[in-house]
Amino acid sequence: MKSDRLLSVLLLLQTRGRVPAADLAARLEVSVRTIYRDIESLSAAGVPVYAERGRHGGIALLPGFRTDVTGLTTDEARALFVLAAEGAHHALGLDDALGSALRKVMAALPAPHRPAAELTSRRILVDPGRWLSGPRPDVELDALHTAVFADRRLRLRYRHSGETEPRTYTVDPYGLVSKAGTWYLVADRRRRARLFRADRVAEATVLDAPVRRREGVELADAWEALRRQVETRPAGLRVTARVLRTRLDLFVRILGTALVEPPRDTGGTWVTVELALQELRAVRQLLQFATSLEVLEPPEARAELARAAASVTDLYAQARTADAREADTRRADPRQTAAPVPSHPVDPGPEPAP
Image 1 (cartoon, one colour):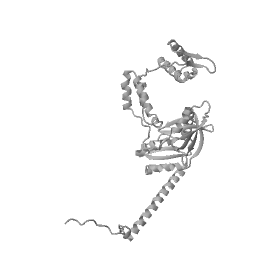
Image 2: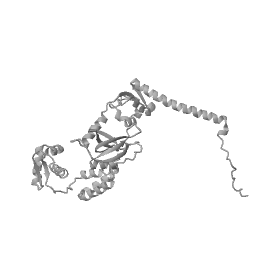
Image 3: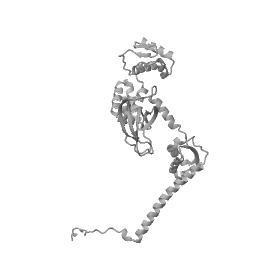
Image 4: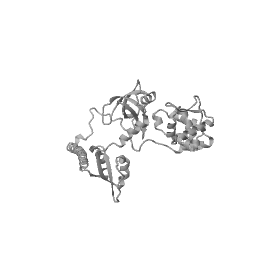
């Protein structure tokens, strides 16, 4: 609706200052001509808005003009109160600020919308944690948060996956991203975007030097490029396996991201799946399904699983042999299992009363 678009234009100008008409058109998915008609409508309604031509021109409000917009719809008010979920705000130390902000929004809401907003906060709960993900390590975001908002460079002591000792990097942060409850720092290192998992940062130091971000690159742009790299990383091994139908749901929950295509259900006890794994050793994770899963091909994957299973069998066979020897020794010399004799007399205590 035009009224909603006019309100959006007003809010964008109020928060961003001077904005090119083409940017407004792209954000609101309309033509530039429509944006100029909307500006004329705002001006006719008494809003002090003007347009400047030229390379550094754009559309802006007169300096000092502000408007309090409280015309939220019922759905907009409900959407705001869903934000009260724990997780990101807690990690950033903003729980109290969020609660205060929501109380102010509640006070500003039209009276008919308040019951729906309050009911939403009691009926909708967002839990960012995954099932059975185990305890999450404590994450210290203070230094990362400070560098991001102060536009300062960061020196990191960072431990990569599979390594025991951290490495030192100097990076230029774009921002922080919470992905399924896990925090990541997106930053440039040597003019290339990199991803740093916050719980692997051993130490972070905010430097005095100003950040050196690449011109025109925003957090969303860098994150999208990094996300695509992770999700489209070429697989080193394609594996065909069959899974018991009764275990298929569990298999998909645990290894669904490795599936090349949906499971092929041809009826019967087993369902065929195609997996893309990064390396041959990664096939060992399939052992967690024991006899509920069988790798069909390639042969090297079956051989790798056989080697892994044999090494586990040897480990417990050796432990069983050691346990058997210890048991035989105890049977041969019962004194080893008898209670130790104290080195001094034990006081039996007072005589029982007659």
